[in-house]
Image 1 (cartoon, helix red, strand yellow):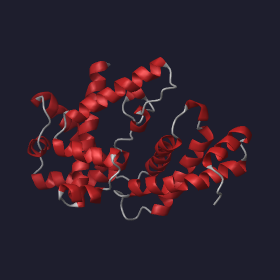
Image 2 (cartoon, helix red, strand yellow):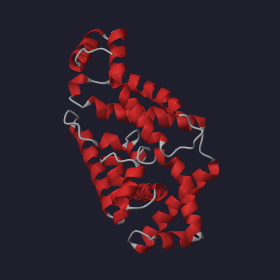
Image 3 (cartoon, helix red, strand yellow):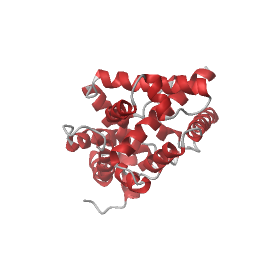
Image 4 (tube, one colour):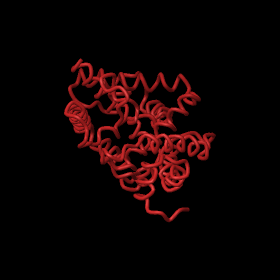
Length: 254
């Protein structure tokens, strides 16, 4: 691996756009791909090979390197992680590895959250959610377990029609953006914070530890003293809950 400082690599690539400089940058940042692939792969079926996820992610890294604008003053790692994950998810979606029945269940849970919040003016309990769906408590946990396989798409799905092609990672402040873009990002962050604040404490903890502290589901289970599968269910419920809140906000502002 090249020992050339990464700043010099970027400067050289910026001046020359040479294939050799790009390849050295790919090599330098390749651990990012393994990191993202590991997090995405944590909730996937065993038949999805980690090496395939890494291969998909490499295309995202290449795209990030080729499109990154040094003059904007952004941190490349933040930019690249979003693109790497997007490339992996795009390929998974293209292969349609999630059964339609599971997608339908995810939508049903999301709609139930939205309906109950509108009726109760608070976050519904698991018992209330199960009753709304016509499930027993055990069936709801089983459904959440199935839906958790789609959780890799959850918070990095598009956040709504008004913010087409905007992901959670894109809400990170960019001081070089224009006033209009800054206003939209500020508004989006406010919506996200408001939606999270209204969630039950355990759901907030799981989202915070997973997305902002970068803990694995197993590590979160140790913190909460529950099993990894239970954390996965809480994460899935939290994400569907959050998405239903964001979509409700979108409708109110439309």
